[in-house]
Image (cartoon, rainbow, N blue to C red; front, side, top):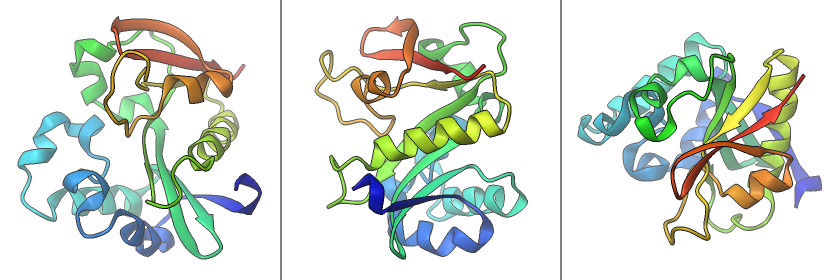
Amino acid sequence: MKAKLKIRRLTPDLWPPLEDLFGPKGACNNCWCMYWRIGAAYRKQPLGKNKAALHQIVKTGPPPGLIAFEGDKAVGWCQLTPREALPWLDRTSRLKRVDDLPVWSLSCFYIRIGYRRKGVASALIAAAIKAAKRAKAPALEAYPLDADRTPSTSHTGYATTFARAGFKTVACYTSPRPIMRHNLK
């Protein structure tokens, strides 16, 4: 499937395809990729507030992530941004900073039903590596689940997918969730 995909940065003109991809429930139960920005408080937000918050981020820029398209249809998304734009990461001891390196974070994914397990996440990871390099980030960090240690589904990706893309585990404060990095310099 990778050859058919076109990956683009989420800019205001691509908001309608993201809305279509996320659907009326905002991908992950009204999250709209706000979890790593505000933590579990996203669950308490009135319907539409998380969507409006992400839309504002998209409008003011820089682009907060990447969208994968098959033709004109958005089939996948990943949040890609400097770690400092995701303050909840610093509030959770599970994912505390490894060091002071100004890494970029590849924090979450959403793949359209029917396109899962077809290489969309891998294509988004490859594009994220390229985008972070272009932005002169020293490293790209991810917070996937280790599927061997938990049966949970993951909107942060799986450790094996990141390992195949060249990421290495740099810390693991909680057994099923390693912190993985791809050095870019």
